[in-house]
Amino acid sequence: MRLSTCFAALALSFFAVCSLSAQGGEEKQEFGLTVGELSGNSPSVTGGPLTLDSGVAVEANFARKFRDLGFANLYWEVDGLVGPLRYVSGTPTSATHSINSVFVTPGVKIQFTPREPLSPWLAIGGGYAFYHSSSSSIASGPVAGGATHTYAVDFGGGVDWAINKRYVIRADLRAIYTGAPNFGISVPSGQLNFLIGGGLVWRFSK
Image (cartoon, rainbow, N blue to C red; front, top):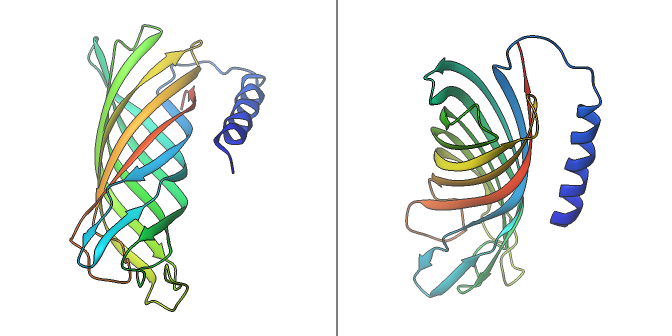
């Protein structure tokens, strides 16, 4: 699916939500949906370089404010990210052909200048990473692919542009460090993933 198609779907969803009647109360909670590009470092292995390509990813984020500092708000958040398909290329050709990924990272977020239209924010968290590797190799032969369950550490930031009290446009940059996925061959431990994306946020009261 092309990024332009994803953004168009998000925009239609956003305007549909905007048409709902507003409820009273302070907006202490928010739900965001972001579409972007997931990329990362490529593993260095014996026998030649491997390249883990970038792919389209969808991110969902739920956050609840628990402290107002005046100059900033503090939130608990749960961030979920799905990268449906990323191809692997290069040598050795006995490595897996593709990798899917899912990350779930609870954490905390600090949002600065919350009463201004533009609000930069920083976030950090940790949780779970799931990778699924193809059982077909780059050379189209069999390979011992399958699932990998490992840790994930999430850190990042972004900028929110508040259209009004409830609806926000978000620019998002996150890095997620995890244990190594199963490439079908021995690789050094650790995989660093990057998300660059944009999306929409709905703020609401409890």
